[in-house]
Length: 614
Image 1 (cartoon, rainbow, N blue to C red):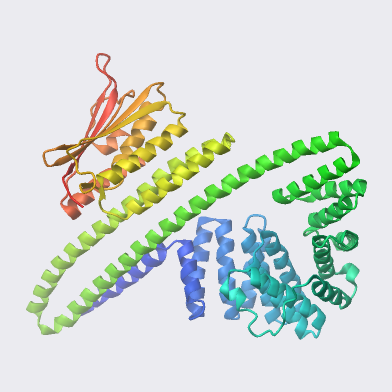
Image 2 (image 1 turned 90 degrees about the vertical axis):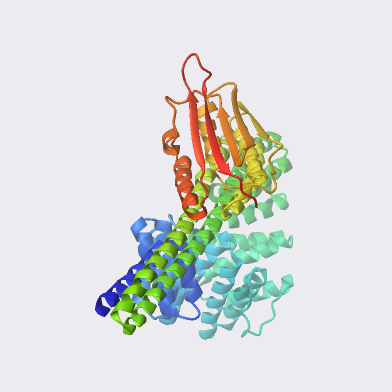
């Protein structure tokens, strides 16, 4: 008997542990790895490895690359250099499919790997590649790290002027970074950061003198490019032209095309400022042909327009003005897409936090189960009869608690499933206006939608909300849907005076799925659609009616899954069953549809909730 329970205990522990690991998403696994980074490298590597395996199973190149950046960071600490090199090569082979940040970290980790192997020339090449990527994304924290790493290598090589140059750049980006870790990178370096123009130029020129064969040096191209930027910022246009030309010449000689468009832009802008318009326009047009950066292209076009105006060629200036307006429009659309991505990312973050909270609760439940079983095993020494009685009552008690806690977790999960279903449909509305290039309406929609989203997320963690909150959510939702459907339908929301809207409550997100069905399957294609939502009190029952004048359905339905095969109504039926088990809270659903020729068309959904107070 003891051996049997011991086997069950071990099996349950193993299954429980594997389920926790399997349920965690890739982002959650990488977060756990990061949490262990400073305290336990083996654990950090373990969780990043699980994330890597999971990303491979999903065939998601972007997630695979992200997992590799974490995993190889921990592998370097564990001195697994050869394995890390193979993984980082995967990222380089797919660099056009991964994010700029992951590509930059890949170069950074390669630089660290070669530095640890004391292959300093290869380390420098990869640190410079990382600097190029993070310069493009304006990531000051990683720029500070990579400039510092390169400076350390030059100092170890005894090239102090070049080391000073890189330390100076690192300190500059460290001050711009909001990352505390980046700001603490320089605690062991006693170096004043030059702030005046002359000092910066002196350090750069001294660094150039230390470079052998500058005509074939990528570093020389980088320094000449920085010099040209400093000169043009101080309106020293002749010096800016000389430095930009040298940067361009070196980059073309060695096939180093990073920021080549910006070098041509500095050259052309300086020439236009000196009224050398023909040369300036020619170099600016070269910059435009090379550049893929919208914001930089806008500046290039503005300088070309100025050059043509200086020449008195107003026809060409007007032509470039038209092109510039087209770029501005595309930038506006791009910014709108970024705002949508930001809203979606925030929602995903909030959803992930809720998932982690539920997983923690699940872990606590499993720990409680393990503790109960351990107590049962200890009690077995008292005697066979007492053991059997203890097991019987403990099992009954355990099953009751387990069912209640499982039902509560299931209830939370069902509510969370409603949120992405609702938000997915709402985001389609935003996409609709953006495709129509209606910036004004899309901006208005995003503003309204943001408030509604916040309200939905706040309600999603509550078991019950007031009738007032439910009313406000439905009103906001209908207003947004009117906007998407060009006001093709009207709506009426009526609340009986007998209801105490502030203190009487109903479960959240019960009314919304049926209102959504009324729009999509009822009035969507009608010229004069009408939706009525009524809240009223009948005895000890709160009744909510959703009525539309749509085409109706073929026969009377009394089951939520039979009304419309939609995700929202299916989840609602499951939530009704769980609320009955958990809260002794019965909800009744009745659906009536009129489709006969001699009857008024439409569908009426009636939800009946027992009276409950907040």
